[in-house]
Length: 53
Image (tube, rainbow, N blue to C red; front, side, top):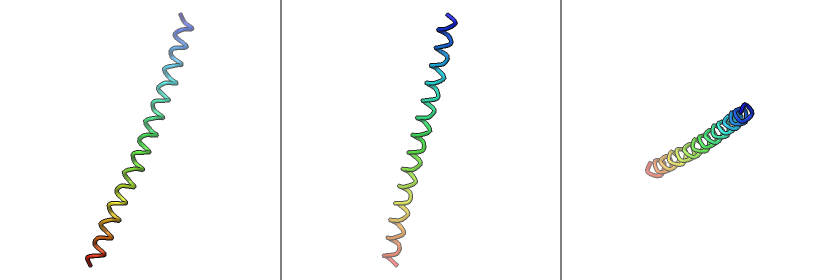
């Protein structure tokens, strides 16, 4: 029983580390995406403002 508990605790810690890594990776990808969207929107309105001036 002790061996089973030890293996279970190891599996849970590896699994939680994996989930945390995936969440950080997804968070980084979303940050990158929204930074690009924001830059594109700013560039669009900057060019539009320059053409109207």
